[in-house]
Amino acid sequence: MAAVLPLLAAALLVLFSGLHPAASTAAAGGEAATVVVKAAAAVSRTDDNFVCATLDWWPRDKCNYGMCPWYNASIINLDLNNTILNNAVKAFNSLRIRLGGSLQDQVTYKVGSNYGDCRSFQRDDGGLFGFTDGCLEMNRWDELNVFFKRTNTTVTFGLNALKGRRKAAGGKDTLYSGDWDARNALDLMRYTAGKGYRVESWELGNELSGSGVAARVAAAQYGRDVAVLRKAVERVYGGGGEVPKVLAPGGFYDGAWFSEMLRVSGRGAVDGVTHHIYNLGSGKDRDLARKMQDPGYLDQVEKTFRDMAATVRGSGPWSSPWVGESGGAYNSGGKGVSDRYVNGFWYLDQLGMSAAHGTRVYCRQALVGGNYCLLNTTTFVPNPDYYGALLWHRLMGPVVLKAATTAGGGGSPYLRSYAHCSREKPGVTVLLINLVVLLNGEALALGPGGEIPELRPAVVGDGCAAPLRVAARGIAFVRFTEFKAPACAA
Image (cartoon, rainbow, N blue to C red; front, side):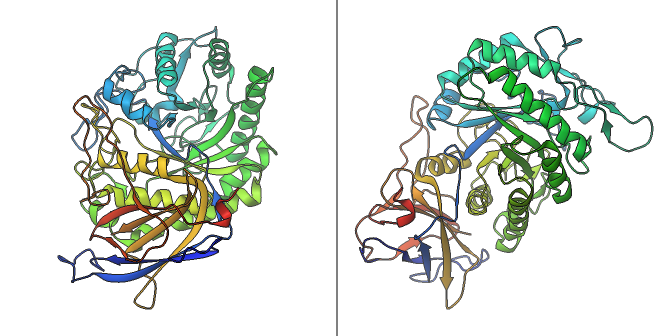
């Protein structure tokens, strides 16, 4: 790569092994591919806190497929003083954490005079998702906010959007009608603001869009309720200082529903349009690992990102697309798959693909809990995807560049490439995924005191005389410190 300043585009020669996952060994020297990074202009921009992880409400007796993988990983019972947990979150400086999930719309906040009955979640076969309503007490909210401040966390909080609504009597229709009762949420916001706790964004509801999951709300009604939330946020925080963002709807993408919600809520009501991604299917699917390494399968979700971006541009250009929750495989993820190296092929590809299509924030389900956790649910020792998330956060800046791969005279779907202006200027960082995760050939493990290890990308300075090599089924972050990209100059 010639050191010409400025560079409008740069070509990187890559040797990568195994054109197909079935290939058992690499041919000598591997296959050659060229990754071209177009640097004249950005294709999109993410939030500075693009990488996000979730904390969920599931109690320890949440079970799927004969397994109960949540233990004490809930917002209600997570050990907030665990050393490894604190070190893992602090390492991001700062990590965005979204508090929400399936039981979000069954949570009452024990504050003010509008909470009524406020009890812990209990198993109930007749309840939504098999549980009764639950309760967030303010002493626990205080503890959470001490943790958030200590770890410099950016907080997104998902509010109960079913308050005040009623399900139609009889039948199988999951439609809930009536106006959202915002009083309990307003009391929580007032308490939070009064304590000086910083919530960066308030989100309304979880998976109530379109046909919903266990419940649904009509788009026009939801739009009116989002407008109510916007007014409530401005009422509480409008006296000065930073006003939190409003996010909605936190559900699966449905173009017509999302467009109507944005139209009815009105200009400027929604800052982030949140949708969920579980494109790998069920956590019990024995084909999960193959899907994670199949470029044709991974490419299918690109249409959702593209359509979502088009909906926001057309119906709510004042807002931006967010992935509010994504665990790959639903129902707690796949045991022995979602928490292993192989999941990184799906996860890092999702980060790269979504960013290239204008997604501002991407929230991974979950920081702790289930089988798709970034940190082991009982020991908090990082799973492989934790390191992928941390590397992305440290190396990939918010400015997204166009990267394209050619091999053998055409494109190679098995070598995935994504490029961003480096977070630490100058230069460009390229993510290469060759569908065993080692970071540039090095194993990753905690230090003796639970410290997060030093993470070192491959660094390429002035010029690149020799090609980079990416092992079969390997992942590499490569930082080009002398790549003077015009798009990165600002």
